[in-house]
Amino acid sequence: MLFFTLTILVWEFTTTMAEPPKKSKISSSRRLGLKIRLLTVAAQMLQEEKEHKMQERETALSDRVPPLNMSGLSMQDLMDLCKDLHHKIDVVDEERYDIGQKVNKSDSEIENMNLKIIEIQSKFKKPTLKRVKISAEAMLSVLLGSKHKESIDFKANLKTVKKEEEKKEEVTDWRKNVEAMSGMEGRKKLFDASGN
Image (cartoon, rainbow, N blue to C red; front, side):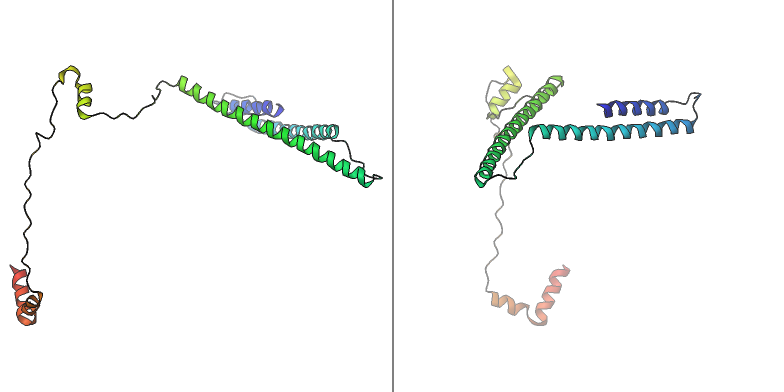
């Protein structure tokens, strides 16, 4: 709490420095000195706050956990003490788990509430969409309304395309083809074919 008020004071002090320059009665060196002093006082207060928290922690622990005096105890007394400590550890662990679960539950509730707040504040709400199977005719009747009365055959206006049959090459004996292309005569045929 103290740190928060000090940060506000420092912020106010620095924002007054950032405003357009008025004829200030305080020189810049004096202002810088004041700022340094203010920051040192804030650092001292933070240190004191830390020490105060540590003292509170130590007093709370000393109240909850009494010091152990194990000198002069028999073996049976030590075993009873260990069993008692184990039982206390189990109880504290159960409490810690329960508190953790409550914290997780409250965090999820806070997150849900924040989402609801954002949804309420937003201008545009996304509707939940459902997948619907609809035919083309039903879609046209929805889009066109009463104008669409007869069913439309979409395939009627399509062009018909005739497929040309691929030219099948004649199957020849590959040995004749190799013999025809071999030697200078075959190279001349290839040269004449590529030139045309």
